[in-house]
Length: 258
Length: 341
Figure 1 (cartoon, rainbow over the protein chains, first blue to last red):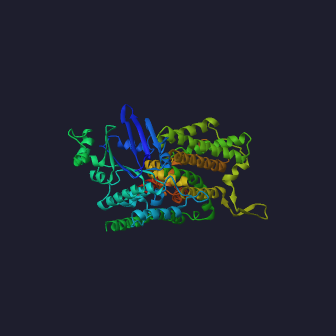
Figure 2 (tube, rainbow over the protein chains, first blue to last red):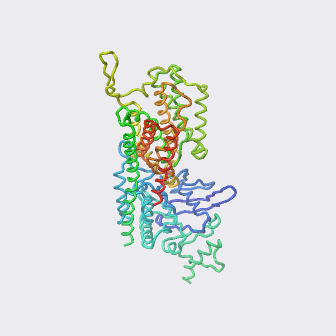
Figure 3 (cartoon, rainbow over the protein chains, first blue to last red):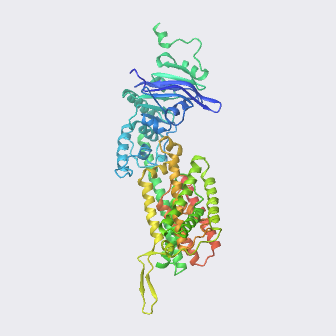
């Protein structure tokens, strides 16, 4: 693992009126690391991720990319720094086909500024085939595709461009077992490529299988940040629900060493 | 195994989906042909070159408005102000002529006035977050009020022959002078408004299909939040659509007033509804993301031919309204049925 974090969020705040949705949270990710971001609904994790992806402006705090402070006013700013997001809702335009969705907002153009649909189709075919070899019906509106295929488009859109940090919001919530396994494989592959990943998930099995480190949020604050080897599922559940570790907690890996 | 069956399933659905889209277009086209056939049988004068050209002329205004509205409707919005903007921009052009400007720059002023109205709509909708229905309803009253106020509710006439050129001129007009000194029209020519409509329709189709802004217009109407998260400047896209709608209403206003060679501040009432009907009959969905210029053109001609044919058959203007009302409801109903399946 390298010395510098890819992205650091320092003391991030987000207020809605009097409500502190995110309250002084700091978070980072190193190259090739998968950080699980956990917490029950309304704990502030989605808010935090939206801030990092440029979809929401923070009320306070600082974001640094490779040590340099940045400001994300809109999603394109975050993308320009290699921060891509796979949203839980997938964020696909249902009436458009797969290539149009893949390149939405970043369309490939010909010399005359026209849309280069032929090239977008070719590129889409290549990248989608890598994720799912059965993906053939690229010209259909995505509303007519299966859940798995839609997920594949959302993933392809996030990894096609020069991605350094990937935010995955519940990437397996809508998927069947075989597709979930595909996403898990993909995460490992991206990890091997040195991409830093924030994995927002409720699925304990996924979290323990994939993450190197977990950060648990409760009521807008970070209540626990641990290397995955240090905690058990019960510990994590306790953090999520109670906002604290069990009273008799000791680090799992240290316990085993004793 | 499950992947394979998914693919197969989606493939099957796609055939249904494409068939559905083509079905709608085909049914609209079929309606158009049936109307032509029916009216031809009802009135012998209907199916003639002269009447055909009259229909082209009459439909061009609704067609121009329909193109602008199609863009707005694809973004998921609506523009109720175009009828009033027609009047305002015609009045502005006429006043510019009266102020001594040559005809072409004067008409450009009118189109710009229309674009300004559209841009104002876009501003209200994107910045003040007022729903399009309310924002453009407001503009409908504002533009009409301004047109009436500027003219004192009296028409501006004596604008000169040059002002009537756009609305009354025709290409390839063939006139023969007879020995008795009276001219005889061999071919009345293709009216300029029809040519203008064709050019605008092709340009708009190109814009929607081949340009980034067109793709963004569809994406915005399809899923606004997704478009925003994908880095589409949704506000700018909407501004663009409303400004285009306003500018095309301005163009339509100039065509209409030029045809009358008079600027009537009370012209264009309820035109927005004909234009919306044209877009909807042509398959545009009021919930956004769907619509084509070719469909809207078919829709505009269905309305134009219905009006013209009912006139030729001696049906009163009141009955015409009733018929067109039912046609619009029927078209939207077909759209609903199509989406429900």
